[in-house]
Image (cartoon, rainbow over all chains, first blue to last red; front, side):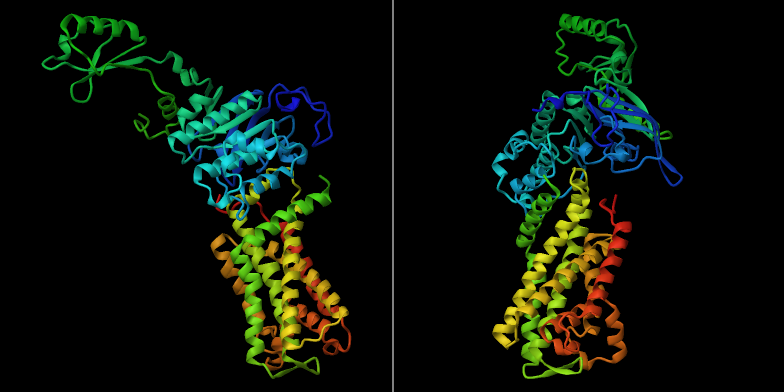
Length: 330
Length: 259
C-alpha cells in the first residue's frame, strides 16, 4: 500500500495546482443544496467524513441520497453549498483527483466481450499507480474467474468485479452505492469482509445501503437523510437516541394464567396478540429478574421470553417515516 | 502513461471487444460482403453510366458497397454500442476514472477506422479477384485515405446522433431508419442511372453519396473527369463530420438517460 492511503495531508492539490488546506476530513459538506426545477431534492445538509472510517449514508429512495452521492463523486453539479472531497471541489476536479477516488456505481453492466482480467487491465491503464490486477482480483475473491468473460458472471460476481474496478487505481476514498443489493446472505457476508478489509488498508469508505444490518455491521458513523434533510447521525449504537431507548420484555402467558397472575413489575403490563404480554421499561434487568424468579418458583418454562431494544431498522423507519403515514413505521 | 500510449491501450481493448462481438462482426463485415456478391451476381453482365462514362458493374458496386460498409462500421455499429454502453452505466463508470474523455472517443474512432479499412480491403479483394476490378497502387492509397476520413466523419455523426436516442432498444431501428432511405437515394443498391436527378441532387448534399462518389473516382478516375481524388465530395463528408462533432460536443452525455 502506498503511504498516501491513510494520509490526510497532501502537499499540493494536484487538480487545481493550489496548495491544499490542512485537511482533517476526507469529505466536508456544508449547506449542500440540489434543486431540479422547483423541486429541492437536497435541502441544506452538512457531512464530515473522517479518514479511515466507513461512513454509512442511509435514507429512503427519493430522499436526496443519490443526488448527494453523485455530487460528491463529481457527476452532478450542485445548486448550492460547499463541498470538499480530498481537499478539492468535485465539481471542478480533474484526472489527478479521480485517480484518488474509487466508485462502485449502483448499476453498471459489464464491459461486454472482455474477460475479467482484460477488463481490469484496461481500467488499470487509466491510473498512474494501479494495483496489480492479481491483487485486485484477490481482494474481491474473483481470482478463479480471471479468464471468464465479464458478461457471463453471476450477479454477485459482477458486483465483485465492480468493486475490483473501483479498487484497481488504489484509491484513498471509495464510494460504494448499494454494493450488496440482490446478494444472497453468504455473498453479502463475503462482501462485508471485503469492505471491512478496505478499512484495515486505511481506505475511507462512503457507503450507501438499504440494509440496516449492513450499516450496523460495517459503519463507524451513520447519517440518515430523509426528504432532503439530515434527520439523525451517530454511531450504530447511539444513532437516533438508540442507547437511551426502553427495552420491551415480552412473553406468552403460561396456560390458565391471566396478566393478574404475574408478579409485581416495575412497569404496567400490556396485552399483545394471542396470549402475549409486553412490559416496556427503561432497563431490562428488574423486569427479567421479577419474571424469572416467579417462573422458577412455579415451574413455568417461559420458553419464548425475550428482551428487545429497538433495532437500527426500527429507529431508521421511525426517523424516515413520511408525515401523514402514522403507524406505517412499526 | 502518455496520451499516445493511452490511446493505443484503449484501442487495443476496443478492438478486442469488437472482434468478439458477433453482432458487430456480422453487421459490419458479413452484410456488405453478402450484398456485394448478390448485387454483382444480379447485374453480372451489366454496366452503369456514371459521371458520363460507362462503368463495369463490379467497378460500380465495390466502391458503393464500401461506402455503405463504412457507414455501418462508423455510424451504425458505434451508435448502437455507444447507447448500450451509456444506458448500462459503462460510460459513467469510465468517467469516474482519470482517463480523459477524448481518449475514449479517439479509441472508438480508431476502432471504426480499423474495422472500416478491413472491410473495404475485403470488398476490394473480392472485386479484384472475383470480378476483375482493376487495381493500382494509387487507387488503393486514395481509397484508404477516403476510408479513414469517412469512418472518422461517421464516427462523429454517431456521437451526435447518440444524444437523440433515448434507449438501447431504439438505437438499432433509429440507425436503420436514418441510413436505409439514404442508401437507396445514394445509388448504393439501385444504380445511379436508374434514379431521378432531383433525388441524386438531394443525396449529393447528404454524407453517403459523396463518400461513394469519392471512392468510385478512386478506382475509376474517369467518373470524376479524370481526377482520382474527388475533392468536393470529400469536403462534403468532412463538413458532415465537423457538424457531427459540434453537435456531439454540445449534446453528448455519459450518464444513462433512465436515471
